[in-house]
Amino acid sequence: MFHIRKAVVTGGSSGIGKALVDTLLREGCEVFSLSRTIRSRDFFVQMGELHQIACDITDGRAVENAFSQIAEQTDFFDVLFSNAGYGISGSVVDTPKEQIARQFDVNVFAAVEVIQQSIPFLARGKGRIVLTSSVAAVVSLPYQSFYSATKASLNMLALALNTELKPYGIRAVAIMPGDAATSFTENREKIACEAPLLTDRCQRSVARMEHDERTGASPALIAERFVRIAKKNAPKPLYGIGLFYRLVLLLFKILPIRFANWVVGRMYG
Image (cartoon, rainbow, N blue to C red; front, side, top):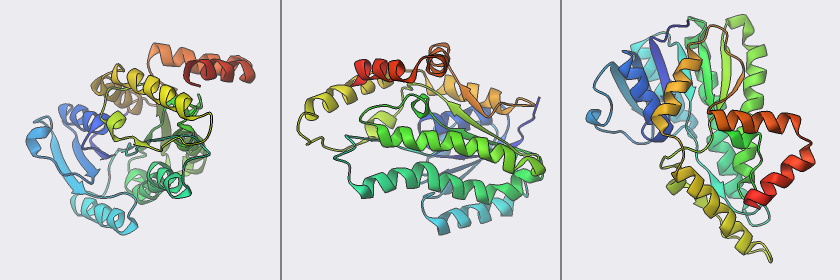
């Protein structure tokens, strides 16, 4: 089993990221949490060693500064949990280019920059890169199409990184949870659907998704599964978690794409 002594978590102040920090601290790890929000130490599990670093990961200089601060504390860490992200909803035809770009900047481009900064630290211990993807990477969600596109990009990124970073001994994993009961739902940016014939459908679809999220899995359970996967000696590049969601991902592999997309349309369209 791969041993995690030190880890970096992006988006560590809330949701799955905060649960990851707590899970790692509970196991006695030294954790570097990168987030725009700095919390009281009492907000986290009172175990392990926690370093909170204020960082907007879309700001290149802030990322460089954060990793300079990490370098002052250590010359290695075992796992990067690239978790920071957010979602937008709305129809493709109504979403402004600026918000599409912002979605990719936070969920994909910033993740790449953090990974680039992490390579020297991870290479010293043949570490792991764990990307928070989503079942939406495989099951393209109507009215959340750009969120789905960013998560699909992370899956492809994990596959490429496994090949490119093999000489360093670094493994990359994209983990695809399903619905989770976190503040992600409240933080979603909603684009007004004003295109003719789409308004009511869009509102119903987003409401259905948000209901599923609010009744979804506990972030603590999801985080525990993330850490177990990161500890595997030979993890696969892609994982779905949760029995129901693993079944959904399997069905999307074997069912005809037209039928699978029809099912999604019936559920969320």
